[in-house]
Image (cartoon, rainbow, N blue to C red):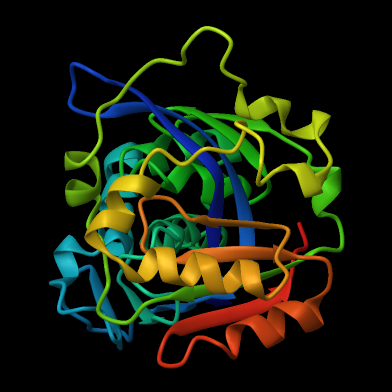
Length: 286
């Protein structure tokens, strides 16, 4: 079985409060994007020792047992209360790490979906979401893999249609050697509940897409502090705007920057301006 775990962008990301369990309550709109890794899951050869072998290229030096793919397998076994048959899992990383694009979370969730189908486990999406939530905060989103309003720690998901994005295009660029760890990103911000009169992200559909950039609706609380740590972020935002994007922002906790465009030709021309960056251009489709 070959799967293509895709990334996501955040339209706005508000950090509302730190919880007693150490996580943070958030509000964001997540949108899937077709920049993908490649994941292959097959039954291991007869006589294989151990449960799973994680193979692949550019795994970032992460030991297999700490990779979210294997953590997803362990969470699935814990839910089932039994060991799964041996599997070979091959992962080719294309989505850059430390970019705020959720690549590792997507790999984990697609592993859950793939193993569920391959082994005929019969788990429904709600069950897979509950398992995914034990692996990482972004993982539940990729089970549904459609635009969602995200609340709580990422475990409260509500389907969220965005008509203004139909047929629009996206360009993404991630500066080389400018990764941002989630831990470092949270260290630079002070969570705060929404102030009275602050517009909620769910109000996005009341605006024309050409008003998104100038409104107070789509705010990423991480962007100011990450821009100070990674000057390339501000530079990339300026370039995206100069190429005609109607909305530009950093995704998640950074350091990737995305621009939304009226057509794919504009997005493709935009990524040409980012020499040496990991980049992607394509049409948004859900």
